[in-house]
Every structure is written in C-alpha cells, then in structure tokens.
Length: 380
Image (cartoon, rainbow, N blue to C red; front, side, top):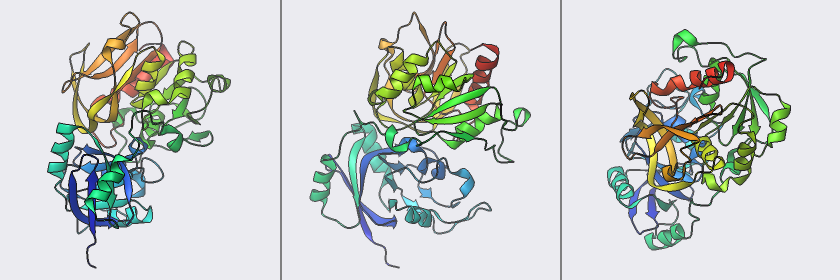
C-alpha cells in the first residue's frame, strides 16, 4: 500500500512533513514530547493527555504491539501520535495486535517519518505549541492558520471530558508476574478501609496499586460533592491525575477544600495541583512540561533521589505556598519545581509525579504504603 503524505504544522509556522499511519483524519491540540523509551501503550491511554498530541523522542515505536492488560483507560486519549519510525514487525508474546491497527480502530491519527529530534528541540527551546496534523490538507499556510485558532491549554477544563459518569467499584488486581514488589502483594477486598477516588482521568494502575495496599475502592465522578463523599463514610480520599488547567477545575477545588481536615487525602499529579489550590497556593504553566520516565526528584528529608515518571504541563508556585501550614517535601532536580508536599497538622500529602510506574521506574512505590499508614495508623 502506498504511504499517504501527512503534515504536522505548529502555530509558530514550523512544518514537519511525514507519512500517515493509524486513522486518517485531521487532529489538533497542544504538541508535547515524551522521553520514555517504552510504554507507548500506557502513554496513549493516559487520560492526562486529553487535548494533546504526543511526540515520542525514542525513534522506533510499535515493536511490541498492543495488549489489553496494559491499557490505562478504555481507549486512547491522545489527539494524535507523532513518531520517527513505526516498527515494521511486532514481537511480543503478550501482543494481540499492531499499534497502527489499534489507532485505526479508535480513530486516532498518527504521523511517522518526521524529524522528532528537531521537533523536540524546538518545543524545548520555544515551549509547547498548538498544532494541526493532517493527511487531507497539505497546504502548510492553511494548517498554520488553523493551529493558531485552537484554544490554548490555559483555562481549559478537560476533566469533564474524561471523568466517569457514575460511581463504580474497582476490584481489579495487578497482573500476575507484574505485582511489584512481591512481598506486599495483597488481594483486593471488600470492606474497610474504603477509599473514595475522584476520577479526573484516573489511571488503572494507580487503582491496582491502591488495591495492592489493601484498600477497597469506590471511584466517583470529579463533580461529586463533599457531602456525597462523606455519606460513603470513607477512611480516605484520593485525588487522581488528569488533563488540562487545574485552576479551571473549580468544582473539584471547592470539594477538596471542604474535605481538607475531615479525612486523610492523597493526591497525584492533577490531584497534587488541585489540593495546592484548595490550600491557597497558585499554579502556573510550564514552558514544555514534564513528560517521561526519567525525571530526578529529591526527597528533602531523606536526601534520597528518585527517578520518576511524570506527565504534567502545570506546576505549583512555591512562593504562593503557606510555609507555616505546608511543608514542601520533594523538588525536581532539573528545574527545582515543587514535586511534593505534606500538611504539617492535617492528614494530607501529594506528589506531582506518578508512583504507579505505568510506564516508569518503581522508585516512588513507597508512597502507596505511606498513604496506607496515614489512613490506618494516622502517620504521614
């Protein structure tokens, strides 16, 4: 089959020509790069990428195919997928299909054959850009104008597009052979301690890890009120990752503010940002965000350095944090952004990175045990 030409056009006039794969349709969104060497399936299905087109810096993608076990949500969430080269063959005993067929089936367009190194350096130097990917319109000037007309990420509430519609219980366990670490693996169970998880675009492996630590989980829409949450009589609350501008998710910020002090709370990624705003801090847009599995973070108490997986475009302003009430516990060693904090008096802590390792290193896995101790033993 003859390859079909495709163009990625950025709002600032940069043009990248390649060939189409996956579903052939136009797509638009914020273009970001991810530095992970593997885990493209988890990246594709991470709801935090809603509204974004993801470029992989690793040059060969698709070599181990797709399987149902590694999905982080029910479908791909990215607007489009940008790679250097699509693998011509698939070799993996767990694979049930190819990457291109998977994207085609879910109507997600992709482009390959572009200089992803040049794209990454451009985004790093000039910041993330809005872009249009097209295999039907090949006039660069028209595509650039369309990219300029896209709404910026600042001010966008994308949580409403990815949150669940109704509450549900999650009892799925970590797949045998992948339940790390082995010595604390537990079966998911009914009964206490019950944790209410706000779904702002929650990843399945976060839920599997919470089950592994012995929690019973009920997942609720991000619009659920604090009053309704308390009717469940939970032992703890979890605020999940998710897409868009945290400051735009005012309903969840207000709910979090009402719950603070009433119940132990743990937040990851967007949850980290939501809680910070609820505590009086501010967030801001990063130049090109943190997306990948190799970000060094230091624990300011132990001085241990963790290699972490991250996926976010906003950060907490450290100057806006009330230091009399909040202790900053973790910092990014690359740019000194806030990566974690705890409340000095109330059972509450949060981290900006992803301890569930999907994909990514296992260094921060201890945070799930810290949450268990906070809920069960009152220690955090």
